[in-house]
Amino acid sequence: MKYYSTNHNSPDVSLAEAVVKGLAPDRGLYMPERIGRLPQEFFDNIADKSFHEIACTVARAFFGDDIPAADLDAIVCDTLSFPAPVVEVEPGIYSLELFHGPTLAFKDVGARFMARLLQYFIKRGDDRRNVHVLVATSGDTGSAVANGFLGVDGINVHVLYPKGKVSPIQECQFTTLGKNITAIEVDGVFDDCQRLVKSAFLDAELNDKLLLTSANSINVARFLPQAFYYFNAYAQLKKAGKADNVVICVPSGNFGNITAGLIAHRMGLPIKRFIAANNANDVFFNYLQSGVYEPKPSVATIANAMDVGDPSNFARILDLYGNDHKAITSLISGTSYSDGLIAETMADCYKRTGYMLDPHGAVGYRALKQLLMPGETGVFLETAHPAKFKDTVEAHIGTTVEIPSRLADFMKGTKQSVPMSKDFDSFKKYLAGLV
Ligand SMILES: *Cc1c(COP(=O)(O)O)cnc(C)c1O
Image 1: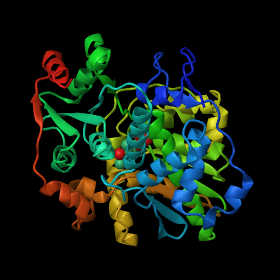
Image 2: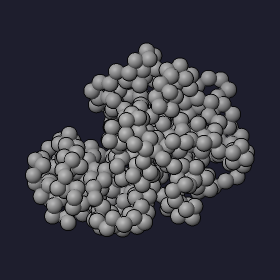
Image 3: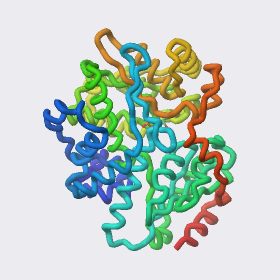
Image 4: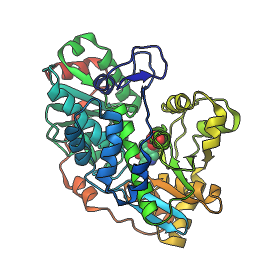
C-alpha cells in the first residue's frame, strides 16, 4: 500500500517511509491510498470476536500488503496488552474507556503500535545505524511515547521537556524509566524543546551519523491503529443489543482520534454520526458553522491536551470528504465548552451517576447530553484516567481521586534527566556524542 500526502505535492511513499518520515516533504499528512470496506460477514459476526481478533482484521486492511500476517498479528496483540471496555454511565450513554494502558491515556495505543512497527522495519531493513526518536513534550505525549518504546531493542528515545513546566505525575512517567529512554530537562519552555527537535532534524551533519525520527502524533503508525477500538466498541454495543443508531462523541484537540473513527466509518463501521467536542479552542466548531477554517493561537484550559488552535488532522478530514463542507457537516456536529461548563459537568455527572470523568471525557459526555436524540445510543471516548488530572478533578467533585497502582509505581521511581540549555549547540553536542 502506498501513502500519499494531503498536499499532493510530494511523491507517494511506502509504509516504512511514511512511518520513519512522519510528515511528507510538502508538509502534508500521509493518507493510505485505499480505505476498503470490510466484508459484511465481519460486521455480522463482530459481537463474537475478541478485541485482538477485531484489531488484527482491521490492521490487515491497512498494513497487510507490507507485513506478513503472522508478524502483523504479533505487533497488534503486543500493542493491545490492555482492554478498552465500554461502560454504561446512564441509560443511553456509554463511556469507551481508553485509559487502561500503561500511561492511562488513549495515546498508548498509537505509541505502542508505532514503536513495534518501527522496530520491525529496523530489523528488516539494512540501515545499521541506531535509531533515535526525538520527542518534545508539554506533558502527555512524552509519557505515551517513552512508555510505548520502553525496552524496544535498537531504538533510543530522547524526551525533551521544559524544566518546571510539567506536572510531577507527568514528569515521573518519562524520567524514571531508564533503559532506552532518556529524559532531557530543557532550561526553557515547550517551544524551545520543539525548536531543538526541529533543528536536529534539519541538521545535515547529525542526520549523516544518526537515524533520527519523530514519533509525532500525525504519524500514520500512531493514528491509524486508533481505529481498532472504534470497531471493538461497536462489537461490545452489539453484544448488549445497543448497536442501532450509534453516535460517537470524541473530545478533540489535534483531531487524530476522531479521524481514526471516520476512517473506521469509511471501512463500513455502522456509526450513524459523530460529534467533535471541543473546549474553548473552537476552530473546528466554527468551521462547521461557517465553512471557513480560521486557525488561531490556542488558549489554555483545564482539558489541556485539547488546547490546539490549528489541528493538524483537519487536513485529513478535508481530504476524506473531498473538501465538501456539506458532506462533513452531515456526518459530524460539534460543540465548544468553557472551563466553567467542563468543571460543572464533572461535578454533575459524579453527583448523579457516581462516574468520575476526567476534564477531557467531561467535554465528550456533555456534548452527548446536549446533542443526543431520542432513539440514539451515545458513546463518548474517555481519553484519560481522572487520576492524571487529580488536582483539577478533586477540586470540582469534592472527593479524593484514587491513583491506580501502575501510576503510583511511576511515582516511586528515581527521577533521572540530562540537564540541557535551550541553545542548539549544546543539544547538537549531546546528540553527536551518541554515535
Ligand atoms: C491528546 C488528547 C486528546 C486529543 O486527541 P486528538 O487526537 O489530538 O484530538 C484528548 N484527550 C486526551 C486526554 C489527550 O491526551
